[in-house]
Length: 354
Image 1 (cartoon, helix red, strand yellow):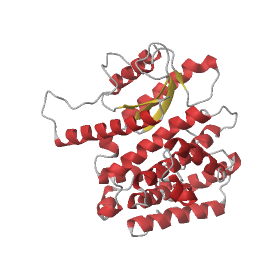
Image 2: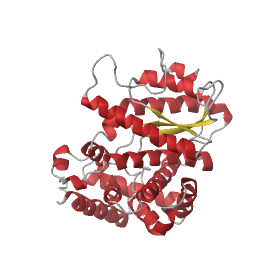
Image 3: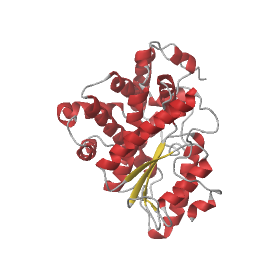
Image 4: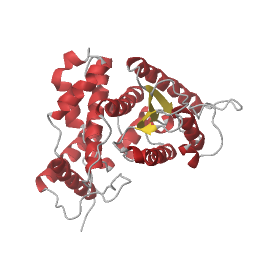
């Protein structure tokens, strides 16, 4: 099997980090197991709502065992559906996808992947959505959730009032809704298309990230029947995304557009219809490839001025020789600094550049 290239040993099930029963569990262990049960309950909801996809949580315990469990789950000759590809590279893409899952597990990063299962899978459905999510890193407490998502110094966050923190329970909902959307998007509308353009993958990924946030905020509104403090906090956090070094999550205005579009109607809309609504609404604001490149180049420039490192694995970060648009830079800089002041309550201290 392809995953055997990456792992050795054996794993009894997909859930690799259950509380150790040989020693008394710590308070942290108990919290983590409680969150894992909450994740399972939320994924059970998606499994019932979307019967053609099996949603599962790949835990962040011993990643080698987790990957072997994944091998058993998706079966022999499975297919990764997140990228459009010809049949002859199916195995190469599967290997690359599993390598990425390995990286996410090791670095405790949340992500999701859609597979068409192969032969003799443990999975009970023909398609499966695998979600990596580490409770201790992402949602153990309100402060942990906030620090991981906004990536600000702990000293800065400690000075914030409790109301400014992201609520860990609502944030867990948001994360799962966001990741579930990625799988639903690939299933219904296809994976990232093939293209000869250098930044086409990041262009399509950018659009998918924005839409996933739109879906997640819509699900949040549907669940809570009102605009909550969490909704305001998460949109402010996304408006500061460049302070995380992330040009791919500038979704605050798109989330606000989703809320403003028809709040009274979509809080009663089924998730299956919300997926369609997100796709339809986003078409009205989706940038062209050229517009995205202009945004990306300006965003990378602003990230540098803010004294932040670009939070991406793939290089180069921008097309060579493409000059940043000053007006876009000014807008992005103002957005970042205004929302920092709004959230933190003080001005951002810019580093001095010569």
